[in-house]
Length: 201
Ligand SMILES: CC(C)(COP(=O)(O)OP(=O)(O)OC[C@H]1O[C@@H](n2cnc3c(N)ncnc32)[C@H](O)[C@@H]1OP(=O)(O)O)[C@@H](O)C(=O)NCCC(=O)NCCS
Figure 1 (spheres, rainbow, N blue to C red):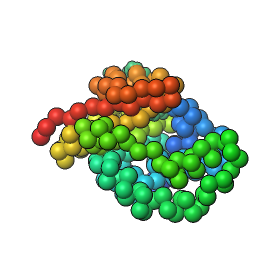
Figure 2: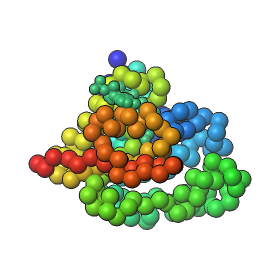
Figure 3: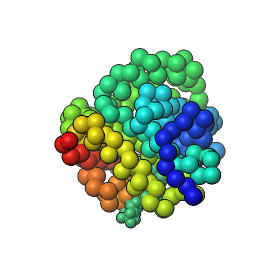
């Protein structure tokens, strides 16, 4: 039975794979990127490195097939990435590493100029999260359970709120977050920011 457990170091590569398998607005991005690990290096790696205590996985017969990853203080996380995560990736992937209009080069652009959370959003909803489940463990109420584990832990630590970014094209994820009580904070054609306040302890 697939079940939730805390992240362990041996899950690392499987989680990068989950990130790729859900990297096209929730659908499989395998084959779309020249470097299959590049999405994981940006959207998974720093969370496992800096906040393994806020990283849970879906263990499906011993293979990590999904994750929720949290950063409790987004601005502190961004600063830490700036000093301890992006420099090595900037060295590995200089600007122009890939064809100008390729998806890999789009990620390289984010490595060199990482998108920053809006100050007002980060003030009211200091934490942020990422969640991705491989298709074989979707629709089993495990995504909702992963969000609960993370939100309960953030609440217990006194965090006031949590936000996330989702591709506006990912209508399934938008419905999922809305169902779990997240509100739309901002919205345009490409991206939607959602947030949820957490109860005071
Ligand atoms: C989106 C995702 C995290 C949802 O996880 P999941 O395990 O499939 O969803 P769950 O089965 O836990 O659903 C939890 C609840 O949300 C509801 N729900 C799920 N999707 C919904 C939708 N699109 N609209 C309304 N409700 C939805 C479920 O019915 C369930 O409700 P209930 O527990 O009250 O019956 C998962 O499908 C996924 O990882 N998709 C691919 C990657 C992705 O899009 N990640 C998000 C990127 S921002």
